[in-house]
Amino acid sequence: MRLTQQALEQASAVGANADESPEMKLAETKFARAKGSMADESYKNARMRAEQAELDARLAEAQVLTRKSQEQLNVLNTRITRLRKQLQLGEAQ
Image 1: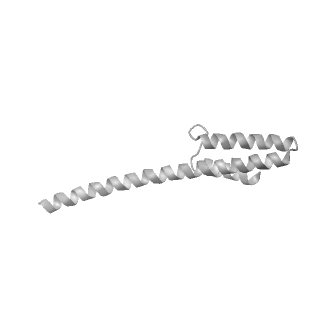
Image 2 (image 1 turned 120 degrees about the horizontal axis):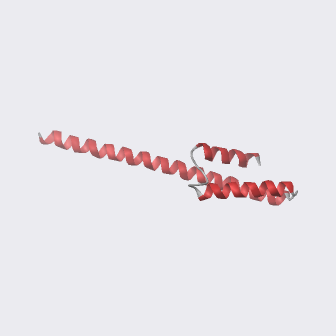
Image 3 (image 1 turned 180 degrees about the horizontal axis):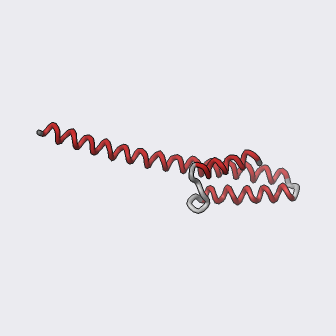
């Protein structure tokens, strides 16, 4: 349960939230169910739901990091294109 909580916190720290990420919403829902199963002393079910929630949270985190990396790559590509155009203009003169 502690690992799942840490995974949720880490995903949230990089910007994953339940409003924008269905995986994060799923992770939070499964974690809540895992807590309920623990309260009912259904430990096997609690462990399974907690593991699923952890994986969903890690997926949400990875998706956010991938999106941020893609955005950075797009910015760099735009800058490279701009520099190439400037170089071409400089060579023409």
